[in-house]
Picture 1 (cartoon, one colour):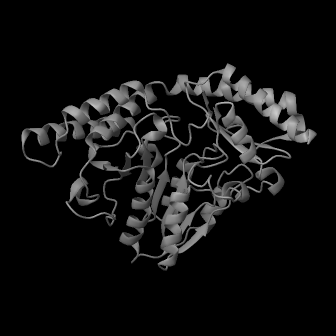
Picture 2: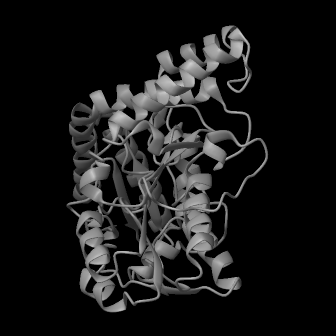
Picture 3: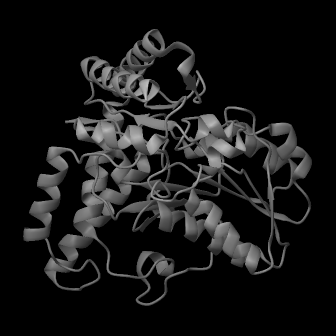
Length: 380
């Protein structure tokens, strides 16, 4: 099997699976219980909170555990908008954000908030001048992703934070770091964001676990109420085994970050070279050259992405036609539309996303399979 869909999800590290399984069996206590099983579970929880905080240079009390990136994003956007609504209702974002952000903002729009979009260039970089022009005294929230999940574009979020806070220091800044964490350094002190969202299953951890960084002093209205867990900000019995697995996955991935990046770059370059050599003008690269090393978005002329995807699947090669959150819809990616990819190219777009487990040989096999299907289609 060749797995080139690591931006959708990653295979958990073996040691993570073993840890989660052991804790589910041996340390199954509720971390809110007062007996010894609960106390042991709470110790694991708080130890992991400290570990994860250290990976982003945060304080443990700035970490809130969630069920994943989607919940973290919903919590940051809806929760902070509710807390800030007396200061204004203007919100800024980009048109290429993940659906978790766009759908949350759509909900806020229906509630009376004004959502405005920052312009992007042909590769998805936000235009900082446009951001600066559009911030207003009543701008309560700005939402920008650190790395685009379809193109691999690295956004200038540190520069954006500087502009936002210089224009209006009360404006809340949320960063979606789901695709960035474990691939590029994330330092909350340098970034100067109020909220940052993270996910476990994108870095070889268990699904159903995430975290939200919430800067000291930031305000939020909780979305989930009940037992008062996570400092009354996110109620619900805490998934201690999953969180522990997240912590182990994070430290392992970050220790391998540079090595994995170099491997991904070699695999990316090999795949692109093979395709260009064989297909020439039938290939269009949508990802920027300075993008993250593990994502490569390519369009193929004259064939739909679903056909390529299912042909590769028949060869035991797994890729994506875009974000896994909307790839089952029969619509062109909103990201490709926003950056101006012509429809005849957009309908043949494939996202390849790599991990440190991939090889250049796999890239060659994948490229050969794609060349085969395109030549077959062209003959027809």
